[in-house]
Amino acid sequence: MFAMDPVHLPLLFPPPLMERLRRTADIDPGLVVRDFADPAGAAALASAEVLITGWGCPRLDAEVLTAAPELGAVLHAAGSVRSLVGEALWERGIKVSSAVTGNAVPVAEYTLAMILLLGKDAFDHRERFRRNHAYPGPAETAATGNLGRRVGVIGASRVGRRLLELLRPFDLTVLLHDPYVSPAEAAALGAEPLSLEDLLRHSDIVSLHAPDIPATHHMLDRDRLALVRDGGVLINTARGALVDHEALTDELVSGRLNAVLDVTDPEPLPAGSPLYHLPNVFLTPHIAGSLGNELERLGRIVVEDLERLAAGVPPLHEVRHADLARVA
Image 1 (cartoon, rainbow, N blue to C red):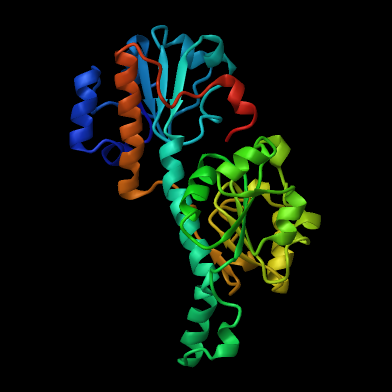
Image 2: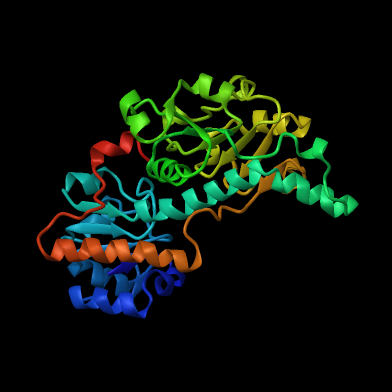
């Protein structure tokens, strides 16, 4: 059965993909549950062997699981399952998979686009061109360009690794901080491993791709933000809580740093936040992840994992309880 906000269903599973899904599973596309207490949802839950979940699905707590005695797998057509599943699910031995790998693709693409545009100083040139209608002179473009620009990637997560792959064709110097990645693995990923502090000191552009876990809360605090060189850029497409936003706001209001922020803390920012209006801030409403036709990629992952389960093979994108301590 489907458990999510029904608005997402047609984009996750367009007709050819839905037909492929229905060849594998006995599932009703007309029943998309947002409340397991609803009579129709409760009746379906009682016999459901697989839940296909997505954004808007209620948390699968002990009460829900008690009402789902046949449940053997949860296939999440979105990213993190952290807020969806609890200890009761793992204790039951229910298999969990997530389409987080598919969701990493557009986030990495968005980040790559921003890195290349930032290297060309595209946002500042656009603002100056709008004001003075004049082409820039050599003095205004002396520091422009992507050749050798130093990009610091924090976190070799799925998004981080995809970004590292996308950065390979470009003449950039790529730095990486991830405490779980060895120097040899970093080299294989095309990056130079550094401590967090050294990465911040030596990067022109810093891109965040770490998970939101207690160990990373405000990992970029006031002291660490101060290490970024004057004129440096912070890109955050991960989670706002990784950054001390009061400290970041001070740096941005002063004009010392620049930022591309697709996520913030809180989200959205209060209406009075200066970040909405600062020329050195490119602020977007959490659009880097899968939107529109990109959702079909997530649906394909779910269908593939369901087909594997039906064939008696573990899902390719399985989430394990032990991994939750260090992943999103």
